[in-house]
Length: 238
Length: 318
Image 1: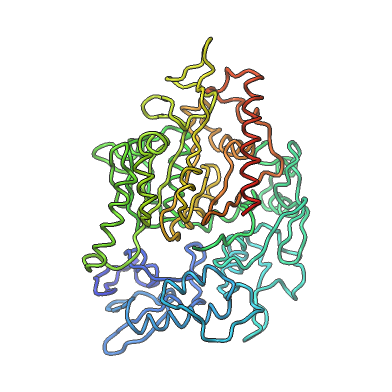
Image 2: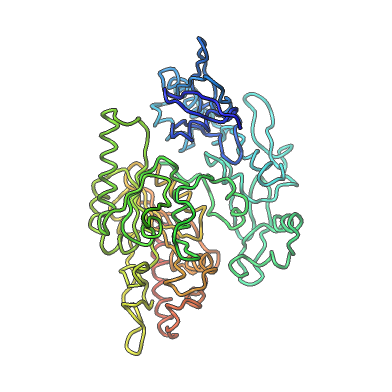
């Protein structure tokens, strides 16, 4: 990979050409906040929290660092009055969208936002449309049970046609990756509830603990070739 | 203080895909000299992944110190200082105060640096207890992590006050007149919670996602945080090395070591076994407990049941 020379906050840095600025900053211990970035899933430019100012020649502009490729001679600034204003506005808007989210509230307060001046939404839950769950389902789990539906104010993450998905395996990876805790998943009396679908949980053949959705075990058996007899015993009893 | 983003308690099935989503950077790297099957260094590795690169570690003498820093090598990819047995918490709080002043004076960049003070059960429950209590009382914004392998393992398995009842160690040997350790394990998490600090949690080396989540919360806490991590030690517990993860899970499933957190005084059990296993499942196969008779096991079961009931009552009240 060819190297390029750039500077971030006046610090001279050598980075791989084309590496995204957010990764370059974090590799060099320069903190940049973000909500929609995950190392395993890459960048999506959704949350707009990672904005930085980039100067090339005489031109300065505000960019999302998670999608801006490192190039020769780039001068980036991660802290300035302008950047602070943009981040505060983004957080205030996210807070207005998700007034219930403790994580957004904490982040907003730490950036100096004390209150929301906009009208608060009450139908969005804690979802900030970061797409992490959709990307996880697609590239980590490999089933693509989730997607975005609608446009503008009614845009939301959901299963196709808002109906219980046939492809969802009930693994819960989306609930794990969700930065705000919007995705609800709970196990009760041998049934897992997630995305409006009920999954029958497999009881361990030896100890009887309900440890994973039956449908997920079948999926694993199908993709890995492991026998169902082996999978039906929980890892603690194997 | 952020609440848990997860409405559930890390069911097993989550552990299939979610591990691919935690940070890939390593801050305690391979090549250290931990025993085969050491789950303590595993717990530490996951804890550091959650804290990230901007972390300073103050570590008391103990297993994790000797295995990670035999001169002239080091396994640490973050600033790390070895301190005496008793003062990990004191040094941690000093680092925190020093960083605060340097930031205020503009001598270092103005960014959050996490301070982790870390010690074993001996360095926490026995020797470092007063320094820890002082640091928690002063309200330093730091994390104290106790990696508890239930005895002084690196010096040759001597008992500590965190050694469980009935365990045979070299200074509490089981024999004709002794059943091994004759006192009950000191409940360090409750002692920390009694300081009314923002965050206290118990974790276990066999539940890595839980450790990552709890360390993230500890990092976000507005003040001192205490994480007590049961770390399985195949050498000292006299179990086969490949069974380390299994015995950690059994400790939690039998409720010998329940996983819970105390956020601002409110208790929440983070892993509730669907069916509580009998304590015998956990004791069986561990060399340190192999001398125990049925009557002693029944006595231990009664004590574990009582403590579990008490904890559930606290969680229900919160």
